[in-house]
Amino acid sequence: MQLTGAQIVIECLKEQGVDTVFGYPGGTILNVYDELYKHSDEITHILTSHEQGASHAADGYARATGKVGVCFATSGPGSTNLVTGIATAFMDSIPMVAITCNVGVPLIGKDSFQEIDITGITMPITKYNFIVKDVNQLADTIRRAFVIAQSGRPGPVLVDIPKDVTANKAEYEPVKIGPVNKFKDIVPAEEITQAVDMIKTAKKPFVFVGGGAISSGAEKEVRAFVQKLHAPVCDSLMGKGAFPGTDELYTGMLGMHGTKTSNYGVSECDLLVVIGSRFSDRVIGNAATFAKNAKIIQIDVDAAEINKNVAVDLGLVGDVKAVLSKIIKELPQQNHDEWIEKVKANKQAYPMSYHQETLTGPYVIEEIYRQTEGDALIVTEVGQHQMWAAQYYKYKEPRQLLTSGGLGTMGYGLGASLGAKMGCPDKTVINIAGDGCFRMNMNEIATAARYNIPIIQVVLNNHVLGMVRQWQTLFYGQRYSATVLNDKVDFVKLAEAMGATAYRATTKKEFDKILTNALQCDGPVVIDCQIDSDDKVWPMVAPGASISDAFDENDLKNKKE
Image (cartoon, rainbow, N blue to C red; front, side, top):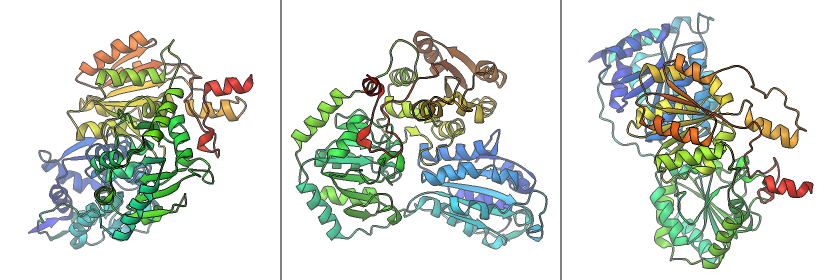
């Protein structure tokens, strides 16, 4: 049957099972939006306050559901406003398809109104991108975009469609879309045997889990492997929930703001099994001294990550789920009681702690954990609050923590929380922000209010750019250049003006009561939590130092004495 390009776009989205799209219309994408209007009973469209919010919402939808997130934008500034969100998804390997429209084919390259080379701009931050100048190629291109976004190492794909292509007609044949064959099983049997042999000779093994385990859906295999290996487990920020944070073998996050137990354990172990992690600089600290006593096995679907940041003894390139399944099958039950007891002793010696007298970020996170019984979807912005959310909420399942790890995008969380709630309407969704991050995209509270999306926005308001201030305190002689936000902005009044319910908490008792009320609310809620400007995230590893040099507040005091 003959359909316009705009009709083909909508039919292809329906083929893929897309039920929600986030976007913002404009001149070049009007044909698509006109067609979307006719299918509003099949595809829900969320009009965000800004295109960046749409890209983050698509990202949050994808992280929360495991499905492909979709966002729309018009040409020029509409498409460039997606760039930060696309880069965020790219750095964290999130499957997303961004559909933009451009000026008509005859106008391309003539500096036409709102013309931009969005495929050129996004080439370094997408898995692949397309500009479709022939309507006959449109359906196949969109289908290919969804396959690319999901297969191998997931990531964002952009499809740019000139306006005249959305109006032109082509023959369209519906296709029944089956499951994407996401991974190729390419690990040779002899490498599996080599891994098993290395594991069997280890006396002090440690497991490090990253976001690849979540992308692979390998949480059951991770848990089975850990039990068979009988070893302690740490994770990266992106790996939260792949192994339960409530398990006695879990030691906490690794790296710059990881626990001393994890940092010391990895520094002392004789075998480190790395599952779906790319060895970010925030994880490894000084690469020359990272896990210097250990042989390293790295499992990753992307061959480019093997030996990229840290030299490993064995790299297994393949789907984490498939590789672990093979290792589990060959590996006899191991026992490392003595090593585990030593690690447990470290957990007792180096507990996570914070000041109990006043309302603090860690207290807020722990109270959220208590009142939600550990079952909420926690979304964060980027900064101190993000680290506290990683440290003090115990993630029992994958896809419970949605956060910008690789790019570190301030302003990510609020849009992502909208996407998460649309994807998982039965889940409690709470976005944790600092006041600096909240300022960046707080206009999306208006989006939440417009659609009555019941997310809870918690602002840990310390009136400064907290993480930057922490660095300025520790490493820049307390010179607080451009980090003080102590002005007259009232987040409660702003939130109420945008249609949300809003509260301010200044004490622990106030926050407890407010959170209880917020969890019963059927619309968006903003909670402005007043905390001290100089609260810090502990422990910490100085930039470029070894992770074994982690220090906390007591260490600083003892050093001064």
